[in-house]
Image 1 (cartoon, rainbow, N blue to C red):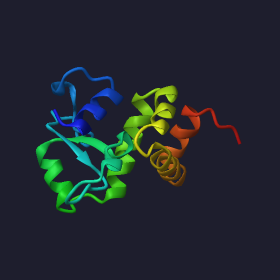
Image 2 (cartoon, rainbow, N blue to C red):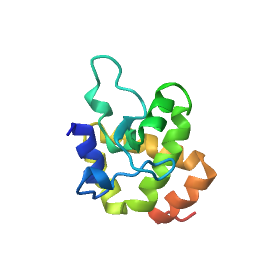
Image 3 (cartoon, helix red, strand yellow):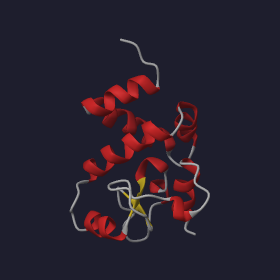
Image 4 (cartoon, rainbow, N blue to C red):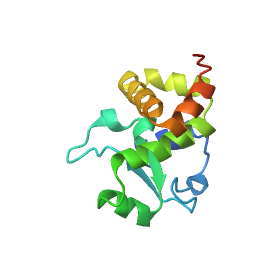
Length: 128
């Protein structure tokens, strides 16, 4: 199993690959997708849960062929993270593999998206 798949499964508390569901439509996922691609040669700093999402092969192909924008994928993925991962665990990701950068990006995207902003504020107990 590839390291980015292990990172994804650990973040969502999944024990077996068969438990991974496509984040777009809920079908069986077989791929862990880097939302911001690693490109040729790879970039290990992109192996971070904030940049990884489970997709089935059809949606994975569409993601690589511009069927979805990166921002669309981040919004879908960040909503899943806000709904399924505890506040404490989300905060713990800041100490992992370029985590400060990714957590700041996560915060920015959530605060700029009205739908995610409400979930983010609730998750992190932010008062006006």
